[in-house]
Amino acid sequence: MSLPIWILTGPTACGKTDIAIKISESIDAEIVSADSMLVYRGMDIGTEKPPREIRNKIPHHLIDIVEPWEEYNVGQYVKDFDIAIHNIYQREKPFIVVGGTALYLKAIMDGLFEGPPADWEYRNYLKSIASEQGSNCLHRMLAEVDPETADKLHYNDQRRIIRALEVFKKTGASISSFQTQFGRKNPKYNCVIIAIEYDRDILYKRIESRIDRMFQRGLIDEVRTLLNNPLGLSKQASQALGYKEIIDFFNGKYTLSEATGVIKLRTRRFAKRQMTWFRSFSNMYWIRAYADDDTTRLSEMALEIFTQNKPLLKETA
Image 1 (cartoon, rainbow, N blue to C red):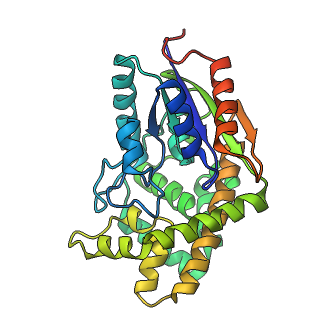
Image 2: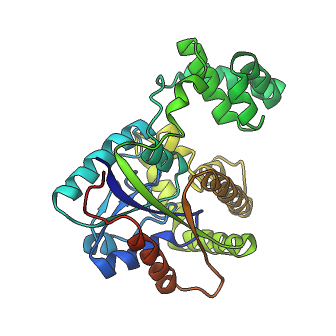
């Protein structure tokens, strides 16, 4: 038996949170987050977390569940997700999974590769090699031990190359040999997934407006408050888009104007990577959005697609 799951995704700044809220209001549904940064308490402005008044009105799950100094990963997310979904089904409530963290969505749909824990000493060693000899060097190292994975990764995809090398070092086997379960559907869930898509120029304007709005709302003060905590920020939290660049601004690496420009540039690149991920998903329903669209029309379109597919509360064989 698999549980039907409705998923709404799309690149950053596509408006998926607002669309999900509209749907939730219309069918009295709850929202389950699939965003790797919304889990952190206190990281509100830079993540555009749904306002507290909205979360008080519509139950949200997997938001504000981790302190910003704590580590959190996809493995823990899947465990928390399973618990949240079970509890919602027990209450017979409809819900929507909303978020743009592709790895989290991949784990929900296809199951999770349970790899060895991070080896930060080895990761830092590999990063030093890349810094001295270039990313091509790490890619060549990977090609020697796991040519299948190397063929799939661009030589500049340093994070995934390092993870693949780390898995080989810790297990003696290629990461591709462990990932055979990816590409199969997760037997626990029967997912209907919708993505919102804008033309690139329109999306980039939305991204720039969103970042300007973050600064107006007090992003700098939020980051300062987080850094003033004696426990600091975890590696993951400190690398979050917007937060990393403001930290660099505090450390004198950028002027404020430069930091703002870097955030916009990196966010545009991030959105492009998200779209590459989403296009690799099978059975995706795409909704084309336009500059003059409002969330009402988009939410109505998404709800129609959802309801034409699997029922939300019944288990299906």
